Structure formats: C-alpha cells, structure tokens
Image (cartoon, rainbow, N blue to C red; front, side, top):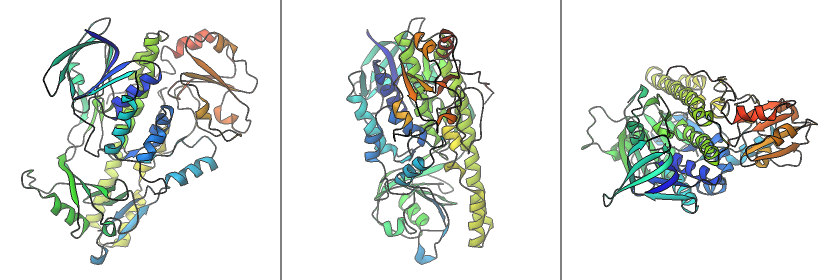
Length: 525
C-alpha cells in the first residue's frame, strides 16, 4: 500500500492551494480530483486582497495576474435599467473602484498599515484553475491526479486509509496517509464519510447561469467598462472586458430545463438581440451553510466542503484560500515534528468563526440586493431610484474588515472598516519601509521575528524549535503601527505573539505551537 504524508481530496482552487502550501514547506502530498480536467464553470470572478497576499507568499502572483483582467481596467459596479440605450436604457448609479494600477499607487501613498500588500484581481475560476494546476504539476513534491475520485476512508490512531477510484476504468486503489484534507466541494464525500452535518439555510434561491462569448461590446459595455452591470433581474459579469461574459439571473417562472431558452433570456436581459456563443448554461441553487465541525480525527474540511455562501461579496473561494494556508502550515509543522498537540485542533477553532462571520456577511449583502430589487418595482422615477441605490450602498465590495480584519483571538471587528493591529491572532499590517521594500516581502517562509528598536530578541531566538528569521525594522515612522518592539509572525502572516520584551522564550513558543494566540469564543451557527 502506498503511503503519503497528506492526501487531498479535491482539485479545485482550495485543494490546489493546499498542495502548493504543503510543498512550499517541503511536505509531499497526493491530490486527487474526480473530474478529468479543471472547471468549465466560471463560479468566482474576484480574487480578493487577502487571497492575493497569500498567493504572493506562495510565489504565484505574477502567473495569476498574467491571466487576469487587464490591470488598467476598473472594478466598477453599475446599476442600470437596460443595456439598450436606443430603447431608453440608462445607467442609474455606478459604484467606482480603482484599477489594479491605481490601487497599487494608493497603497504606496497610504503607507499607514491600513492597506493590503496586493490589490485584488478580477479573474474567472475557469482561468485561475489552469494556473494553479500548472504550479502543482510542476512541483516534484505534489502528485496530482485528475480523473481519480475519493471513495471512502477509515482512520485509526496513526493515520487514514483512503479508497480511491479511477473514473475511466473503475480501478480501485488504497492509499495510506498521515492526514486527509477534504477539499471536495459542496457535496463533499469526505464530509459525508465523517457524518458531519451542515448548519444554516440550503437552497436560499434559484438561479440560472449563462456563460458566453460575444464581441458585442457596443451593447455589453453600453455605459463603458464595468466589472458588473446589475439590474433587479440579474448581474452581467465581464470576465475579461473583451469577449467573455456571464449572466447570473433568476430563471423564469415554471422553469423547465428541457424547454428553457438561454438565448431568449440573454436578449431579454440586455434589451435587444446580439450575437454570441453560449459556452455553459445551467440552473443552480446558492446556499448559506457551514459545517458543524471542520475536523474529525486526522481528517479536515476546507473550502466549500466546510462552508457555502451566496456569491455576494465573493467570500466562497477566498475564504477557502485562507483555510488552505492555515491548514497547510499547521499540517507541515506537525509533520516536521515541532507542533504541539493543540496546533492542528486550532485549525477549526480559528477558521470556523471566520466561516460563520463570512456566511453572515454574504447574507447581509444579499439582503441589500433584495432591497435594491424592491426599489426597481416600487420607485418609478429613475432619479429617485438612483438615489435609493446610492443610499443603500455596495458594502459587498467594500468590506475590508471582512477581508483583512478577521482575527483568531475571538474579537470580531467592524466588517467594513479595517483597523490595523498586531494583537495576537490578527493579520500583520502591511507597510513599505523607507528603502521602498515591502515588509511582507521580508518575512521568512516559516516564522519571522520583527524587531523594532533595541529590544532583546535572544530569548525567542535561542528557544526557537521551529525555523525562525529575524527582521530588524529600522524605520521609526512605521514602528507605532506595530504596537510593540517584538512581533512574532506566523507563516500565514498572522501575529503569533507580541511584546516589548520577552523573559521566557520557551513559554512563548509553547503557546504559539500549541495554537493559542487567544481564546476564540465559538457560538452556534
């Protein structure tokens, strides 16, 4: 029987990010994906600022940006009556957001710790998955197999025995692993085998997705380039601002998949006929669900296997990317032998509250869209409708507290405003130093000790049981942002510990490697 340290069930963005994370720490893994290739369905269309920071740590930012929407294009969200201007269609209100190029400049100008290291990226999951696949296929520490399905598991005190099936031939293989990660989506077989239930609301709406190609930019960009064009009937997503688009809308009453006409739906939504080539069209049901547990013994859940959201806010894949990085470094520390017993258990205690918070945020954003849809039905004056939309706002694309402000110490901050802090469990604030370099780019792959001023780092350095790099930050202008003279940073760029002095380095490391930056309070979903 073959043995691997980690087996990953599921080869979507979360599973592939976990594989990349493990490999970056020198840990071998086997990844299996039941589908024969990467997805044909667009699914997500935004990789948020936090995910881009993590992808930068994994050495993937340049490859991903090469396939994303042009960096000079905006992230605008425009509410309209119709795209057919000749028939009276008009733009009601546009929420304006900077391009990647503009955002980079803004990050440099506002060097106060409130900014991300990386701007977000507009990109379809259809495009992002092949980049992630190439990254892991090229890595000798990752054995990635498509067309191979997870079937079953049996675990004991020393490992997990996993049954796999080759989809094409039906051949069965048994693999032994130290740990199993279920990254196998909303219908997760791993979650089912663990008998872990989902809490929340299933099938909260019925939607129809039409993914298509068209060069009718005179219509599809009738009011200029925008990331989303929205009405009360649905959202048109510009996947590349060129020829690839996705309409997410409500199916007609009396929906029958055998007779529905996607072409007629596109014409009706746009306001007039136009030329296109439909690539994929299907109905689907969004959910607001959270797994009651993220761990069962030596088996863990991540991504959609653990949480499922309405797409408003773009929290699905992005929450999963942070899941993968958190789980990845903790598995690696355990397999390398320097983790304490509580570290792996902290994956659930840290990530479950984030999953719940993001589920609630997704629901709030959806409620705002419902309110705007109601305005379309009740307000006849376009100018009044525009004012109503502007008043309700667009927090789903402005919730920096959700994206950057989540913490692992039980403190839940403002979902919209991000306030930088080095409280243990918080994300390390990002700044540029006086020499122009980014502090994030000077962090080591494992733990990093930031030293401000003349504090003595030797107790932490001498007692370090894990790889540790020290960065001396000789920049008085940014030191106050970090709130202490010594800041110990984890591999996922969350703060592990801080203090103006350290008397007992061994005690600090014992706490950090036992997964205790704070004491999160877990409430029922």
